[in-house]
Image 1 (spheres, rainbow, N blue to C red):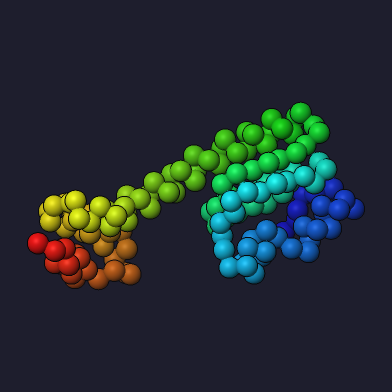
Image 2 (cartoon, one colour):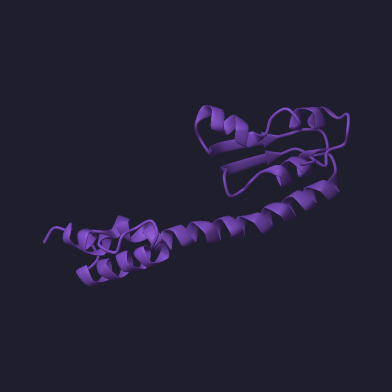
Length: 138
């Protein structure tokens, strides 16, 4: 895998030593509250190397001296954010009913649990539906 960074730059040398995901794995998290990026012209390359499906970054500060890069970086973020929202929405559709457990009717719980089982039949046994519905206090 190549980085696409200018050879000889400090960012190029750093990229070949360690990736952001490696750092997060070492400290045991995939969540970053604040990420500041200032690598003198290599910002776009680093942003493109981030696996957005595995890392959750809340706030970015990206410093760049080139207006063209600012536009490209914002464009990349605009493209990626809907993908992340879509992924989160999909998870909410599958598991969100569990946070509304007490307010849902038994019929709604059964419907939601059935949907979850159908989405992962190799991982969740069909009996989960009845077990989940019966665990709701009367």
